[in-house]
Image (cartoon, helix red, strand yellow):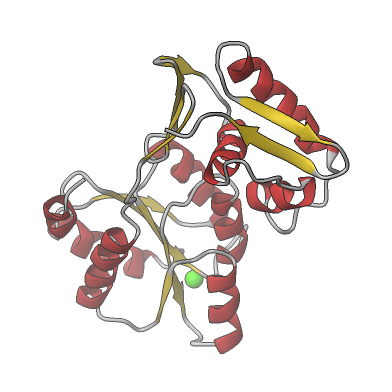
Length: 233
Ligand code: CA
């Protein structure tokens, strides 16, 4: 993923979520002309379905949407991936901008905006969020963040998105004890009110999938949480 690809937009998929057809088409037109592949959604629920199927490299997300608003869409995406999100807001309302950024949007633009500036922001955001270290390794375990793939000793391990996010969180903090509360927030999101046994169940599944075959262990630290241990390479 070099800068050239980003500069031309080739091969990059952008999901445009906007309920106003004219604006959606305008954005689509300018992104397509810049070389991006474009997927569209007209409301929040459609946005999540399109995000699952198109696996976009970036999401342009309107704040005010029918069915499910932009903030809820943003939270739902953030629970599963770090896909860069450019928020659009009609109001220029400070509180909306702040909460959008708090919830994990990477940038925002206030309507009306120039389509050329939007394309420039999309490019800048893709450059800024390009992973510098795509592969995380510990012991025989390799986690490929952009591809969302995990291998143990070269063999692919099939994980659910939640298991992947949980493992990514553990491997991003090797050797550190992570509390169930921290893991709930990082993996399930700030508004998740489930109990911490949810974490235990998913840890159990992860251990079954990676534990048997590898020199990497997910340790239970009594009264504290979990820790990933293995030889850093
Ligand atoms: Ca709207």
